[in-house]
Each structure stands twice: as C-alpha cells, then as structure tokens.
Image (cartoon, rainbow, N blue to C red):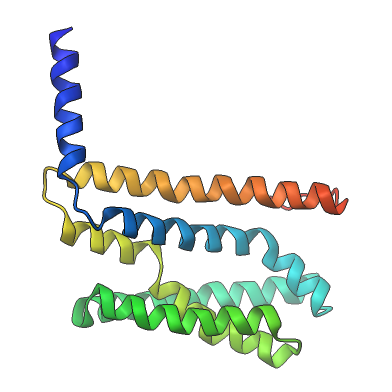
Length: 181
C-alpha cells in the first residue's frame, strides 16, 4: 500500500510540473485532430455529392491529396527546425484557414483542386500533430515529457471519438443510414 501512495504522489507531482502552456497546446491539438478526423469522415461524400465526381475520380483525388500532404509534411519539418514552432504554426494556420474556406465555400472543381492540392495540404501538414510534439518536447523536461506525450496522445484520440459521435449523430438526424467509417 505504501508503494501505491508513493506512486500516486509522484504522479501528481509530475502533473504539477507540466508547463503552463500545455493546456493551450492540447487545445490546439484537440481542435486540429477534430478537424483532421472530421474531414476523413466526410470528405469523400462531400466530393462525390457536391461536385458530382465519380467514385474512381474521388479516390484518385484523395490519393493525390495524401501524397501532397506527405510532401508538405517533409518540407514543414525543415521549416520547424529553421523558423521555430510558433512562426510555422501561425503561417500554417493562415494557409489552412484559406484552404478550409475554399473547400467549404468553393463551388467549382478548380477551386476544389486548389483547396485540396495546395492550401489545405500546406496548412494541414504544417499543423499536424508532429508540430505539437515538437512544442511539447521543447517545453517539457525529461521527467515530465512522458506524461505530456501521453496526455497529448489521449487528447488526439478523444478528438477522434468526439468526431465519430458527432458525425454519427448528424447522420442519424439527417436520416442517412450510410455509415462511412
């Protein structure tokens, strides 16, 4: 029993040692993960239903987008090392906002392509979870880092659960029985 209380006190102490910026980073990670999981749930249906793109073409479009995401992600890792987390995050947020706006309000296929192949991948890849991991590594000590990374991982997965529940509820309320998990 004494070992249990010692472990509990140690865990509470480590939690209290976490940096004050951690809640902001976790909030940003939650919101970005929510956006990422949400788009994965609805993007295929959005492309096929709103732009009358065939299934095969939608698959090709999403495949190209995924490939472009990787390229921007690799470039983003170099930018984070040279410019820093904060500057890259602010730039990426602006680019991602433009891409998401075009994706939401654009009504032509060329605008869809610009959003999916240029603005969204650039902003979203730079805002990926890796950016927040770098921030956590820089803000934590070796003693508090495992707890911070574990909390970050839990927050990201919680965003996925929230998206799944929200999308499922919206589909049930809309009368759509198709579940695209």
